[in-house]
Length: 110
Length: 117
Image (cartoon, rainbow over all chains, first blue to last red; front, side, top):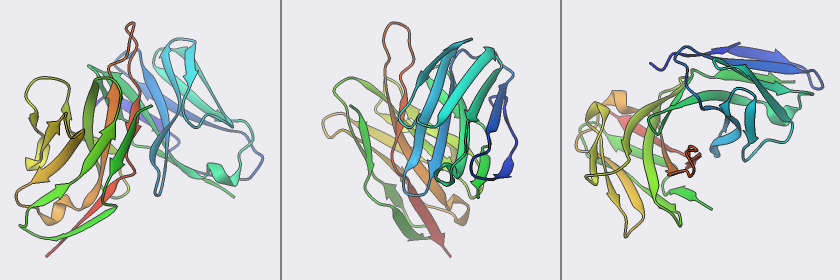
C-alpha cells in the first residue's frame, strides 16, 4: 500500500462545468502522475509532477491542467469538462523506479 | 519513442491450465519492464518488475516473466491458473530517465485473462 487516496471516487458532471480531482499521498514521494484509462487504450499519461510547483505534460494533456502546491497533494482540473473526458482517472507515485497507483476516480461527463 | 504491444487482447483459458500473456516493446534505450494486474472495478496492482539482474523475474500469485533483450519481449507466464486470476493484465515499459529524472511509463493496451472452470 503506497498510501495513495483519490477523491472523489465517483463523479457525474455536466458538459462545460469545471471539475477538480484530488490525489493525496502520505509518504512524501517526489514524483506524482495522473493517467486516464479508457477501453482499448490502456493507461495514458496526462500530466506529471517532479516536485512542488514542478509539473510537465504527458501524452494526452489537452483540456487538463494540474497543480501541486504541497508535496502530498496533486490536483487535476478539467477547466470545462467534455464528454470525451468521461474516463477512469488514476493517480500514481514513483518509488524506487516503480509506479504505484491509487484506487481511481470514475468520471462521467453528461 | 517507446511503445508496448500486447499481442492478445483476450485470452480464455481453463482452470489449472498454463497461460502465457505476450508483451513486446520497442525502445532505443535501456528500459525497465513491468506487469500490472487490474481486477474488476479496482486499481492497478504491481505483479512483477524487471529493473536489472536475472532476466527471469518472479512476482506475486505464482506469476513469472522473462526479459528477452534480443527479442524485446517480456512475456508473463503462470504454470497453472485459478479462477481468481481472471483480470486484465497490463505490460508497461519505462526508460531509465536521465539527469536524475524518472522515466515515464508507457502502457500496452491490456490483455483480459478469463479463467473458466
